[in-house]
Image (cartoon, rainbow, N blue to C red):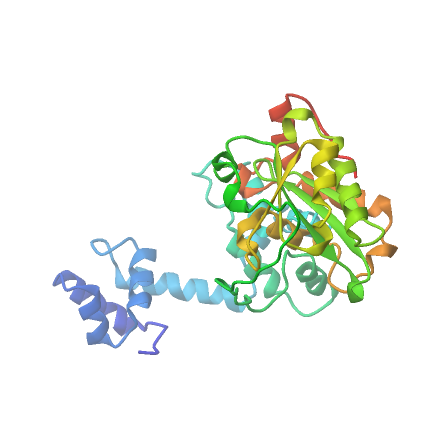
Length: 336
């Protein structure tokens, strides 16, 4: 059943079989057409009861002509292509964010003006080869062709002094109902010779970037403590970190800020999923292999501001900055 395109005779026979009230699975076997293809054909053409083979064939032929001419919906909507280019190239928005913000301008009945994120992805990848296509893809969130397999359930043991396990963390942290709980990590630079600290608030997804001169435990703890001290008292409740040796002096953070540090299980990045996801966003600006010692403080602040002002699906397309400011009932810009 490799047949994907239906002929007129296929559609006429399909129409007769539908009138006999046969199941789609049985029709699929009779016509030797994949079930998924039949489902799409019927869904796009007014359903089982109103299926018209001549109308369906005419519509299919018309859409095929459009594809041959290289026309697509995005090119027919005034201003949409330039909106996509601007948001991706200037602000590194994802197609999903672009589609949501664009569609918010138009009511649901104005379907000719609305667009899906899948259509934006398709539009980008069918562009002819050239600098524009290359730059657009480079500014998408991830450029991997395949998802990497996540290793789960691998046990390992590390012992940091006075370490509190993530399993001792209050349950209120898990459901994200109370803000002020953070996740921390390091982004490592070229040849493991440089690093940048990251702090992400679990409820608002607010990001603080912590410049580091080296990865020594005492220096890392002092740098994180300085960043946390700038936060309001109600936003300094806990921090969850992995069991990296750079956090061996975590008691310095607790003593200077009052924030309690909890440690995730070894090789369990999903226990700090918010931070891991945010690190992926940061890699758009600081790809692997970057010497982080050469990145200016101004550039780090700019990246932090861009990510805190980017609409997020998980926040109902509010920005982390808006979500954080709403909690404190004031406007906020993080320092790093």
